[in-house]
Length: 69
Ligand code: SF4
Image (cartoon, rainbow, N blue to C red; front, top):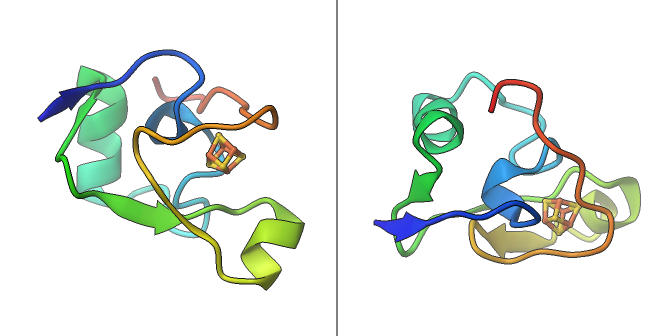
């Protein structure tokens, strides 16, 4: 497991935005930690259009905190 900090994809509302109830995603946000190899879709429109996949420890300026953290 890797520790997640504010600003990283695993704690962003756009990470796995199409399936926010996914158990691993829920646990990630509760515990602020993620499996090392965890990747998911970024739901920001332009990224989603090109099927961008990012790791839980990635990040960008469009970070928005997930409400269930
Ligand atoms: S790439 Fe940016 S907008 Fe997409 S999930 Fe990661 S922090 Fe959020």
